[in-house]
Amino acid sequence: MKELQPVSSRASVADVEYRSRPSVIAATVLHTGQGVAILDPGPSASLATLLDKLAKAGISLSDIRAVLLTHIHLDHAGATGTLVRKNPAIRVVVHQRGAPHLADPTKLLKSAARLYGDDLHSLWGEVLPVPESNLQVVAGGERLALGELALEVAYTPGHASHHVSYFDPKDGIAYVGDAAGIRISGRPFIFAPTPPPDIDLELWEETLRKLGAWNASMFVLTHFGPSTDTEEHLELFRERLHSWSAEVKRSLAEAGSDAEKAARFAKGVLDELRGAAAAVEIERYSVSAAPELCWYGLARYWRKKEAA
Ligand SMILES: [Zn+2]
Image (cartoon, rainbow, N blue to C red):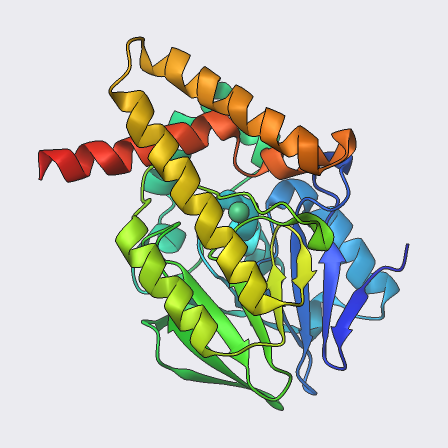
C-alpha cells in the first residue's frame, strides 16, 4: 500500500493503521507549498505509524506547520500535544469550545474515561496538553490561509459541540471529520457516530445543510477516506441518523435496563451492517463509535429534550 493516498493534487490521506487495523482512522495531509498541515492526526497510539508514513513520503516533523482539528475527541486529536512537543512551531487550529480542553486535557480525559474506563490509555495513548500559545482558535466563518491553501471553516456541531469542518473551494473538497458519519472507503453503509455526551440532532440537521451548501465534489471522512457523491452521501446519512434516533426513542419507553436496551440496539445495528458490509469491515465501523455507545448518546439527547 502506498504511504499516502492522494485525494487531489494537494491533499492525501494517511491510514494511521490504528491498532494495526487498516481503514479505521485517516489523517489528512495538506500540501500547502510551504510545508504541510495535518488535519486530524489521530491518537498518539498510532502517531509512530503516521510519522513513519510521512517520513517515507519525504515529509519530516519540521515540515509540519499546522494541525487542523475537526474536534478534540481522542481518535482525531489525541496526538496533537505530542506532535507539538516534538515540533513547538506547529500551530493548532481548533474551535473555541475545544481549545480550553487541549490546553488542559483533564476534563477531556475524565469524559473519555467514562466511555473507555481503564482501557483509556492502552486504547488511545498519551494525551499531552497543547500550550495556549500554539492554539489558533476559530468559531466558524473564517478563511484560513495556509501557504497556497485557503480553507473555509464552518462550525458543524451535532456529533460534538465544538466540531468544525474545512472546505477547499479550489479543489471542491470538504474535510468533515465525523459530521457526515462513518463510511468505510465509499461502501454503501453510513454509520451515525452518536456517542455521549454532545449529540444534538437539531444542530446536526443545520450542520448537514451547511455541508450541502458547499456543493463539494468530495467529502473526506476521518472514518474513512473519500466519499464522492456528497449529495447522496448526506441523504443516506440523514436517513440513518433519523432511523437510529427514532429506534432509541422507542426503546426508552420499553421495559428493561439501559444496558439491555443498548445491547439490543447494538445487535440490531450489527445485523443491519452484516447485510451491507463484509465481516472484516464491520469492526472498522465499530472501532470509533461502538453501537452500544451510540445508543447512550442518543438516549442522553432524548432524555435531555424530555427534561427541558
Ligand atoms: Zn471519530
